[in-house]
Image (tube, rainbow over all chains, first blue to last red; front, side):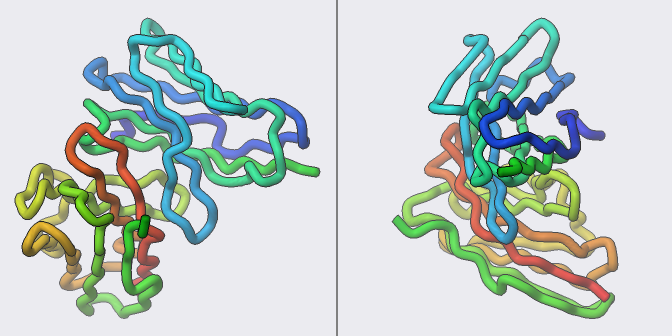
Length: 112
Length: 113
């Protein structure tokens, strides 16, 4: 059973646009919500993470928005660049050191 | 700082054969994870070690998969015998300890024919 549901499956954005990826979860015990970026042939790399005590976290062009009551969180990539083209995974866990439950991923293509 | 190392990077075997993957975590990282990533899906945890002890192996198909982490450093994951549905990328990750960021290796892509 997929514990974290991610959408859309794929996304095409023009350079300079905003990329938005959404995730939803059911397990209210989750308290750590990271986003990973994965390039072909590479392992996932942590991009940004949030805990449910805040509703938003921003790092550079990347922002996580978190809605605890709706059990949803999203990744916003501002001023998207072709170099951002990759697969993005949301995940959730009970504390960052335990098993990460990943979404199915979103393939992002940023066109020049 | 060197990252998580995995070998081999690619492996092709026939069904019912055996295969083993090796992982060398980041130096000093006590926690080690093996994930299975099937094409088009997110990684799924197979097993988690804390030093050389197993923390979670609830999703490891124990009839065919085994893993060990001798001396609390390197780890091997074995599949015996392999099935077609085992075709996937096997990712190793490590962290300083439980509660710390997980760093992933490049993975081993397994194709079972």
